[in-house]
Length: 266
Image (cartoon, rainbow, N blue to C red):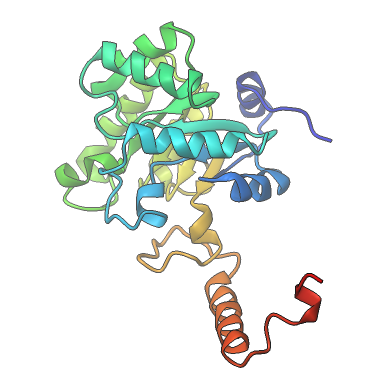
């Protein structure tokens, strides 16, 4: 039985050049499956708003919704480190609000670390949260909560943007984050940032040189048909399997073939 993974373990993996694996989970059964597969970090992402709740963006997700999903994941007692996304407007309105809401995610939700989006502009918030001993994972590059400023889900850090993204990474590390997600940036830029930082980089659409990788569980299982980013690899196609199972159930009930005596009580 593997031991519980902690923040120091993740930092040590960077030092030893061991790749870090991260997947999302939003409920008890998926948390059990993901943890059983051996991932190092479970991210309870605000991506739940898109892949589970059906929103077009992550912006509508609330604190109460995130707390619900984090609690469900924690009930699986995962050995993986559990990191929770802080939803839009739970930390951008000031340090006091940020510390209070992050504290709720740890105390009431059971998360072991939190993740917030933003670089230099959020470094003061990361510093304040880290100062009260709440571990922070940063997130720069393509930040989904900034979709309106970016004009959509577009690659960031090309040409004149590269220096700003690099500065964001340095600021997040200096503010006290224990790791940082690099999303939707050129592979060369991600490699340069990963080589420079002493904290782990977790890539998503950022090439192979990051210290770890993260994907959305619904994407790798072929369960999200709303979009299919270039950086996603589908490791299974479960949508047709589930659809076929439902069709078989419907057909058997309508034909009177289910339930049988085997599925009935005497």
